[in-house]
Length: 298
Image (tube, rainbow, N blue to C red; front, side, top):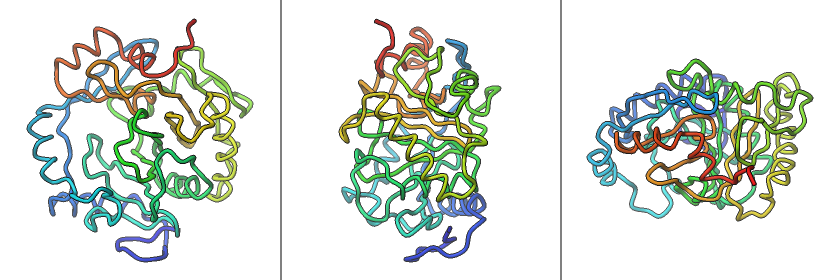
């Protein structure tokens, strides 16, 4: 159940999450609580994918301005900024706007109490995610640890609405995943040159968030075993849509000047300037993903 529009202990009401995201985005923009990086988008193709690359138009100036607005407390989620609050999702999670974003309507699914970002996801985490995905057709993702792109220790998943960017696909990586795991089990996609695990959902996914949570929690645990990330300190990225799940182990946070979080494995990358875009084009976005993960070659 979703608690709309104000901070409460328990959720009340449901069904208007997307409208709440839009309303709170407008409010947080007016109040100055929300700080978005101004970007331009380009499509860079490699390995059969049309990658969406967002290029910051004035990264250093905006970074300095944003830095002045960063919360002074070590954990910005305890307490969170009221202007960024979207909805209470459950007794265990709230939905907040991402204060510093490069993608419009980017939200965070945050535990009400502190949990480590490197802790394995649990049933409550998945139920909160599916409660949001039931109302927003989006891409949910999890950066397990700083090497995987996490910037905060307090456990949080993230969600961006679909379609994602100006490319031809709802999610750029869709073409490489479309034929994987046709039986609903775990599989790999031949076009991805790094260690990963894919699971198809679609018609196999239960309708209710609680049942979907149980189903995907089981798949998630199988995926972590398949990619060698059973230990809680193992860095990895998890991506979830209504149609599929993808898990990727991580070896490093960035390649050269290009940082990578879970969105990279969806086919979306962020660069700070045109020089970084040239670096990305020279090496290729798929090559960069291979460099920050665990190569399947050799």
